[in-house]
Figure 1 (cartoon, rainbow, N blue to C red):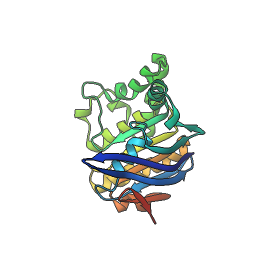
Figure 2 (cartoon, one colour; figure 1 turned 135 degrees about the horizontal axis):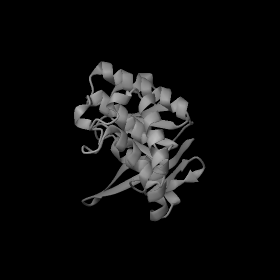
Figure 3 (cartoon, helix red, strand yellow; figure 1 turned 90 degrees about the vertical axis):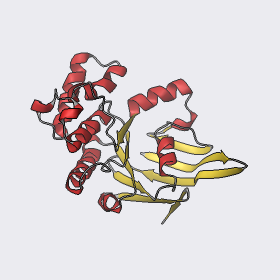
Length: 222
């Protein structure tokens, strides 16, 4: 369960203070695929950074599985972000000189998992997202955009996170491949019992989500 309460993020712009995130509260249960939708400048990116523990809020709390991540020390926050939060990006952000398998194994290496266990889980996850074994050892440049995003999803799941944040996950994909990726995320949310939030401006993605949160000028609107 993700629970956000009275979240605010304030920036100084010249002599003015700007509330990029303005007193936001919402919750998302485990196993649910949801979206945060809004136009450019609505505060989506700032909210994503806060939820992903990449930035700290001015006030408010972000509770993930009973832990308020806004109160963690910097060192604990780094470990928590590594082990309990997964990220999926529009541009995939795969390491180009590593194979698909190695890209998925990498987060588990940072977590100290033995190599055999890393490989077994990486192979399992790649299979779950629809990457066939003949492509496990291919580097990202030898994979299609849809295949690269599948690898990125498998990598996000590597450390069994309780929260996955997807930033415009279909932005670089054609509409048919994008629909496949969204269906995959919906099914994985249930299968892995994790909370998946896609940040997007695409209302087509929002229609596929169980919960939608509309953001405008830093505030949630109905």
